[in-house]
Image (tube, rainbow over all chains, first blue to last red; front, side, top):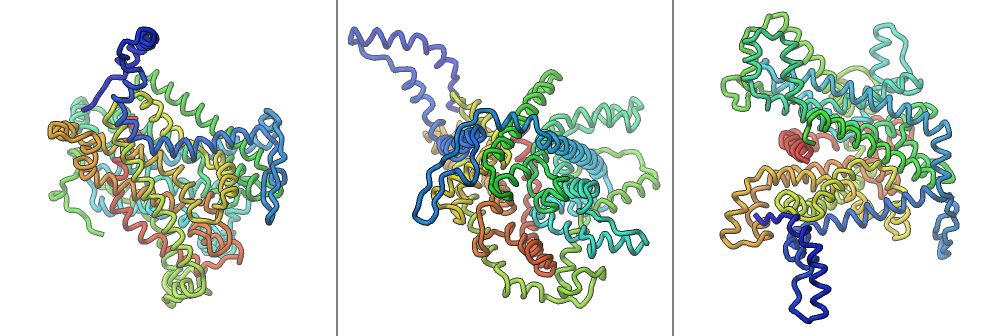
Length: 339
Length: 291
């Protein structure tokens, strides 16, 4: 319905402008202008998308532009516009060009945090994907109690994230947490789950994997169920081993789902604020701080609040993710995926 | 939990295992599933059990000890839990309502019409999902501060629309794509305008999709931490995510109220979620895969 090719409009564009110019002189009846013709054809579509376009423009676009601008200044708590009582103090921060970017990219802090963020993202996504894939494959078989298992395995996804994170903090508690109680029951010394840099890193990864596996599993299970069973039968007929069937039927069959969930979960994990913020607060020291939590820290936890630095990190995170998404998409396309 | 009997199962996977599985393999599979299920369920179960113990026994390892609802009554009477709950409810409810209303029509337009700017819009919707909280939080904070909206539910609602609107539109497109176009055509034959078709024919059919999208955006707003922690201060203005932080940070660790609050927050959400999750995945992957 109402499918109008945009080509016709685009093609006619050149002629339109000429015709309009001429018609002005001669007073001929005006052919509809390009804009008007597009409007009359597409106004329904444009009206229907208008609210979202306005929302995106006003409350995402404008702050984004402001954020980019702030990253080019030396704005902090002391020099932004603010009101103290009835006095309004105007902003006194100034434009500093790319200094913030130069500082971030040449200093240790950004690169160090980036390194751990990459380790965090890659290990979380890889472990989550592998576990999700394994569980999805098991659950896709005829097995007694399948729906009970499925319900149990989905549970972590059903609990609001911040609640789960606090539950884990409770389990990880060094003196009185359950995990250390169990260890001491077995005669093993308690582990400083969240207070030792290495253990803290492992702990936050474990929690994020725990949170992420259900989504992976359900998505992959959906993908598995869309693979025609004839393929497996034919392969079995030809004497393919279980591994060969997995390798040559399951993996390619799951490709559309896998590529999507890997992209999504990479982006989500890279920006996973609540797990780090609520579990360790980035500590001990800044050992588990990822880029997003560190950027948050600059503007909301340290004094004076460093808005410029925070925005700079924010823009850099966005740029990194955009580059990642573009490369990912290009790689997929060269491998023949229509994505 | 009820185990479905294989013969009555209609959503069963297409025939996969025709050969017999050896008892050993069977045991290994069950063992894996049991271990995984225990890991998945246990932390949640443990919090539930702890919430039913007197606060001073919270960190003991006994599963059942002096079961009591004291943590719950204490939580409701002596803390601001109900206020936080109300704040979260208002913020998440309004976000969902506004978000779903404005993104449904966009989802439909993107699903059905071809129009200049569509590709750009689709990309924008996709790319905004990549926005780290860090890139918008400072400017939005400053804007909210200058408009006097910090510490106001309205400020958080507006902020959460930046998260929910692109995602809702994306998911709604996926749902509309699954509704046959013939229905639109029949609407046109009957003389309905495109908007009339959307409103009278398609929207009623998309109710499950609307429900799932609404649910998802509700849950997202319900569980948001970063903006809520930065924008809302003072015990009366906190949402649940901020409120729970008080139990664990400022006063040391008050595991009693913390666990009780966790249960009260999680159980309703989990029940609805388990009910809705099947459609959730369909919607998300439909939207994402077809891009």
